[in-house]
Amino acid sequence: MLSREAELRAVGGAGFPPRPLHASPAAVCGPDGSHPDECLRTLPPREHGGNLDIRYLQVGVTLYLPCYVEGCGLAIGDPHFAQGDGEVSGTAITLTTRLIEDGPELRRGPHFEGPVRVLDIPSRRFYATTGFPLKAAGEVPPDMRYLGASERIGALRNLSKDVSLAARNALLEMIDYITETYGLTPEQAYVVASVAVDLRIGQLVDAPNVGVTALLPLDIFTRR
Image (cartoon, rainbow, N blue to C red; front, side, top):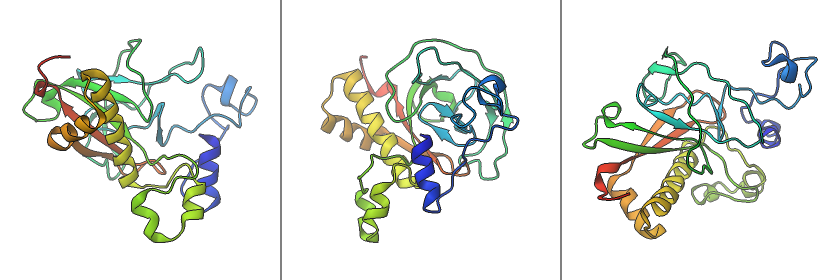
C-alpha cells in the first residue's frame, strides 16, 4: 500500500505519506517508534479499513475488516451517526461502536450488513461490499484506454479519485460474494447484480481513495 501510493504521488496524484509526528501508537508509528516510516495514514480508506465514510454504517450494522498481519491490532475512531452520500465537506455526526471477531473472506475492501431501514429499500436485510480505485500493476482499465496514456496508467496500482474503477471493484466483490454464498455462476451473479444491486457513492473527499458501495437486498433469495 505504501509503495503503490508513492507511485501515485510520483506522477502527481493525491496521497498522504507517513507522518510520524503525533502518530499513534507512538511506540510503533511515532518519531522514535519501531516503524515510523511504514505506518499508513488513516485519512484515506483502504482494503483494511481507514476513513470509510459510508452513510449506511449506522446503528445495527456490522462491518467486516480484514487482518493482513498476524496479531494485528484495531483502532476505531470517527464512526458516523449521520452523513450525506459523498460527505462532500468532510463533516459528519459520530457515534460509538463495539467489536466482534471473525467474518467473511475479503479481497478488495470491507464488507458490511445490517437492517434494511438504513437503506430505504424493500428488503428486511442487506449485504454490502466496498470498492476503491485500486488495480493490478500493468492493468489498464478498459474505459481508460482511449486516453492513450497506457504506460503511465499501467504502471500504477492506485488511481487517484477514479469513481468508475471504485465502482467496478465494488461490483466484482459483490459478484464473488453472490457466487460463493448462493452457488451461482459468475455470469448468473452478474445478472442478479444488474437486476437488484445498487451502486452508491460512499465518499468523494478522502483522496486518493474515493469509495463506492454495492448494496444487495437479501430478501430476493429464498435460501442462504
